[in-house]
Image (tube, rainbow, N blue to C red):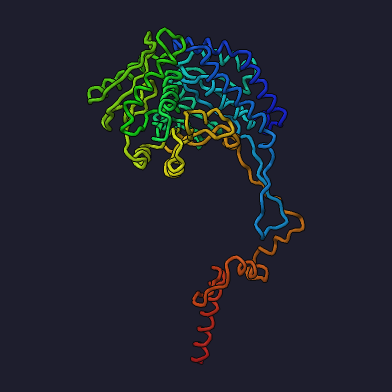
Length: 480
C-alpha cells in the first residue's frame, strides 16, 4: 500500500469526496437503475439505494475519530505498570463483490466502510446491472484515482477470477450458493471474508398485532424493489384463525400502494428470474395451494404480489428463498409453534415480529437466531447505521455497518509496551525462585496433599540421574 496508515484527515477526505460524488450523480444513478430493471421508479432508487449510501457515510464521519483511537487495555496483574493497547490498522486492499438488486447501496456501503478503515478497494459490479455499473465507474473516477478505488466489470467468469485474487479481505453480497464458492476461492489465499447472503426471513404476526398495520408493512416489504431484497419478509407466520383475513389485507395493501397503471412498481430483473417466480407459483398450485394475486401493474416483467395459502413443506416456496413478490402464509396455533418453525429452518438474515406482547418478544429473541431483527416493521434495522448488519450461519458472516464494520475491515493489532524498569528477569529460568513460587501460589493455589510434587522435565531427569548414580555407588561399595 502506498499509505499503510492513512490519517484521520485523509480518511475523512475520502469519505467526503465519495459523498459529494454521490450527490452529484444521484439522478444519473437512478436513470441507470431504471434501464437495468426495465422498470424502477427514480424515487425508489433515490430513497432505498442512494439515500442510505449517504446516511452510511454520514455515520462513518461521525464515528471515525472515536473508532480510530487506540483502545487502551488492562495488563495482567503480573505485568502491572506496563502498557497494553489495541490499534486498528487498515488491512490493505479490500475486494467488494456487488449484487444487482441494490447495485448502488451494496457497492458504496461496503466501499465507504473500507475507506473509513483506511483501505484501498477493488469493486466488482454485477453484469445484470451494466448501466448502473457504468454510472458507478464514472462516479468513482471523479472522486478517486484508480490506485485508490478500481471498478471491475464482467460476467461470472470474471467474478471467479476476482475472488481468487490475494485480497486482504473480501466483502460479498449474494446467494448462499455463490457465497460458498467465494469462500472456497478465498481459502486458497487465506483471505478473510464478510458474506451477506440472505435466506428465508420470517415475519411473525402475533395475535396482539394490529392486523391491517402488519399486513400493510409486510406488503411493503414484499413489493419494494419487486420483492428482490435479501432482507425482505420471505414468508409470514400467522395464527391459523387469522390467515385468510391477513392474506386479504396484504393483497389490498399492495394494490393501494401500487394500483394498476402506477409507474412506482419495480420489475423482476430478467426473464430467467421471472420464469423462476412463476415456476414457484405453478408448483404451489399443483400441490394444492390457494394463490391470491393483487391488482397491480403486470406489464413487461412486473409481477404482482401473490399471497399463497395452504402452504406445505413439500412446496418449493417453502424450501427455497423466494427473492420476489410471493408471500407464503404459514399458520400456527401457539406461539411456541411459531418459534419452533423458525428454529427448524436455516438461520435467516432477518426476523420480523408484529405485535405488542412482551411475553412473546423476549423468548423469540432469546430462542431464535437471525442476522438482525426489526419489531413491528421490516428491514429498517439495516439503514440504521449504528447497528451492525450481517448474517449468521447460512445467511452469512461478519458485519459492515457501525463500529463493528470498521473493526471488521481493520486489523486489531495488539501492542504491549514493557517499561525499562520492569523486572521481567524474575520470570526467567532457573525456575523455583521466590517470586515465581509466590505467583504460582497466588494464581494456582497450594498443591493438594495427594498431588505429587511438580518438577520440570529437566529437574525430573536430573533427579532420576542422581538416583541412578547413588544406587550404583552403593552397589559398588557393597561388592568391595
